[in-house]
Every structure is written in C-alpha cells, then in structure tokens.
Image 1: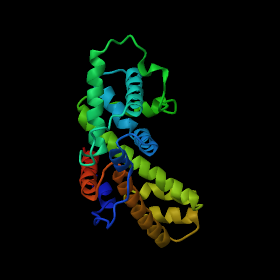
Image 2: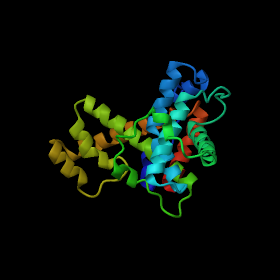
Image 3: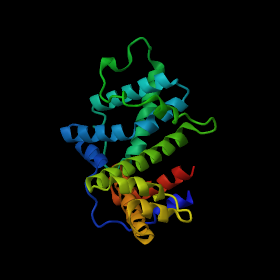
Length: 248
C-alpha cells in the first residue's frame, strides 16, 4: 500500500468546504427533495460495502442482495433523520449503524412477507454475478473490516470513474486508458517509452501527464470522501481511515 499512499500525500485543509451529499442529508433532516436525491446518490455509490457486510454475516448471495435492496428501500422511504444533527458523524458510520439495526430487526421478523414489498428504490439488476463474486469475503475478515475495505474501494472506484469521465469530456479517453495503470503504481523501466510511442509523444511528456493525472485523481478521491462528511476536520479523519482500510 506504500505505492497508493505515495499517490495521496497529505493535503492542506481547503479554505472553504462546499456543501456535500451527506451535509445536505444531515441538515435537511430527510424531508426535502434535495435531501432524498442526495441520500439516493450516496446509497447508489456505497452499496458494495453494505452487500459485503451482509454476506459476511452468513447470508447467501441471493439473500444478501434482497436484504441490501430492502435496506435501501426502507432508508429512502422513511424519515430516518428527524433527530439527526450535522455533528452526529460520518455517513459511513451512520450507514453501518443503520444496517446493523436493520439486520437485527430482520432476525426478529417473520420471513413470510416478501422482501421490499414489491417496490425497488434502487435497482440491483445492473450488478453482474462476477461483480458480486469478487466481494466474497475471506474467512478471517470480520464484517466490520470487510465493510471498511469495500467502502475504501468504492471511494477509489468512484474517483476513477469521475476521472475517466473528465478525460473523455476532453477527448482524451485514449490517454486515460494508457495512463491509468500508473495512478497507483510506479512505472517499470521503459514503461513510459512504450506509452509515448503509442501516443506519439515523448517519454518526458508522459511523465508530466502521469504527474497531473495523479494529482487530479488525488483531488477526486478527496472530493468523494468529502461527500460523506460534514466538515474539513472529518475529511482528514476519513482520509486517514481510508488509507488504513486499504492497508488492511
């Protein structure tokens, strides 16, 4: 994980902290359309750690999918935020607490009723079998640690997707595909030369492009984490937690 850490050096606190998805949810109390949209975006982004946590609790893949779906549905259809203040913590913490409570209630319920009541607030149809299979937990990993690890991976994947979209918007999709391998790994000898030849440029230019791409990736990772906290201090704490989760 040293290579990853080198890509994300410590950053100074920004002078302003824009309104984020989680601060919208926390401040709005779950009542506004803006809040519901913000919560839905967070849920769409962070279903993998929830699914992995449920699976690690001993549920089958199918049951884990059903329970993840129902958890999202209940979270979105109910006003869960009446007593929520912006000082009550991070979205990651809230989500895991809410899921643990939900699973506890599920164990006490009769299983006769169909899960989700026939409604789907978030479709899991796009999740392919192979995507779920790679979430299968190792026997020695606790549910909490697996949740944190999947959360960290989800953050990196969201940032990478945003970076890919930005590059595509600039007409540089080919550059992104050639350079993405260097975002978290140092190049082997001669690697830049091969990329330079394919892109019709010089190795020195490739090195500069990689440096800029890493910097932008670092910014997007921080922006993604910022969406799940309510202030700069929590952002720094979550970044440290991210690195710890990636390191295992």
